[in-house]
Image 1 (cartoon, helix red, strand yellow):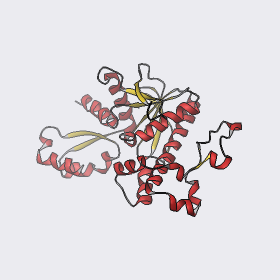
Image 2 (cartoon, one colour):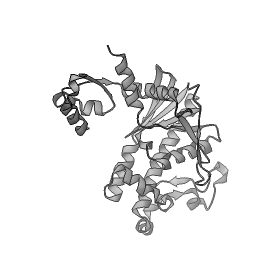
Image 3 (cartoon, helix red, strand yellow):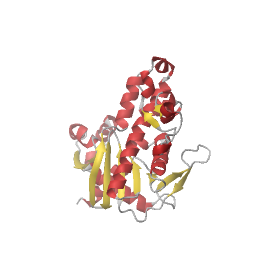
Image 4 (cartoon, one colour):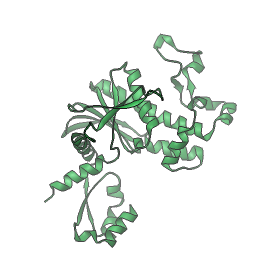
Length: 279
């Protein structure tokens, strides 16, 4: 962002337009720099308003002649897993799960009628922060790449570790996580776990928590369309497939996790749409 602001000054952006529409945390973090360095005034817009407007607009435009939204078929099977388009022609009501540093979950009833149902502070920032502590400091892409090579079952305690298999009485499969990081109580297992295993377990812990909360919100709000967005998912296929599998499994096929091809641009597009309304 500092490089962009400096470029704005060098290219004399203020001679073309003195007001920039901006949204999200950066609209506040960099406001003074835009003004003092770039001679540009920010018109700060609500992040969630822009997010919803941007998603609905991008979905209406489509993607190479097909729907912007998609879901994963057979998400737990690496060989059979495939992305399939999902037509969001009737988007309402919609549960929108926005995963950034934290998570906000919105029930959207129309483009101008939505409410924030709940959220959680355990989001993308939590994953990257914990990875830095556990692995010695990484960039976000490095942390995700490291997680892709790890084995979380060396870190997490599973249902089968406690009961020897499935807990059939409550329909809990043996592979389900019973205690995130539960194996780390053992000195022997701590020494056997690699940094990659810790990164993978951290990613799955955060993702499982988000998926569980999203499913409960969908049930409470009686909404069966759940769209996951946010920069945390931009290059994070592991979490997307995990969310897809978890929602499908625990809802017995009633819920599908939906994603979007152009992840990470919705807020900016929403802000641009507002800019076009200005005189």
